[in-house]
Image (spheres, rainbow over the protein chains, first blue to last red):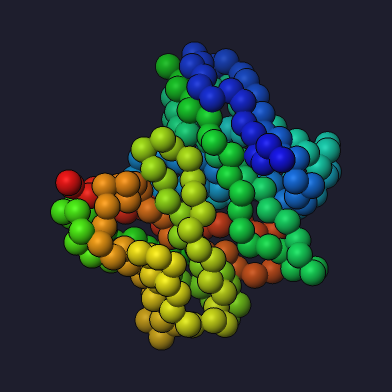
Length: 116
Length: 116
């Protein structure tokens, strides 16, 4: 298994540009999430999904869109990038076990985004 | 609301010293999970431990040990005989147990530097 993969690893955008951060997992996990990590702030939840076709907002959703058309993929879209979105983005997945969530998140390697 | 506090922003120790990283959490739920993750300089997030709220037994894994005390809402992490390879940022995180998803709430992290 490749686990959780994220592309690209690095990206530089100009203010106002749009782009999609890709996240894929091959473990058949139901749950997927996006976090952003800023210096001194820990990781904060942007959006999450409990299964294909179902998404919800986390702590810091503004400026980001998500969709979940398949179990494997959970892309994060920046519609109009702003310097405040400069951050490291982590995608994570987890799975149910025995009807209860596993509570262990498997993290991707991260995408470092700079918006100028 | 959930909250995780890691009051120590940065810690510096000399190799072979013991070091304890503090984690204090807040939750209204009686059922929850606590985690520790390590983020080495390479940037990935490495899962260290998961502990559920019903299990207050301390855990030891090699040079790592964890002390979970519900009475003080703390889940502290001790590294014995620290090594340079332990230098990293360490995150404590909390997940409330409920059907649907397992998003994590992270502390802001403690940067540990182990000096040779």
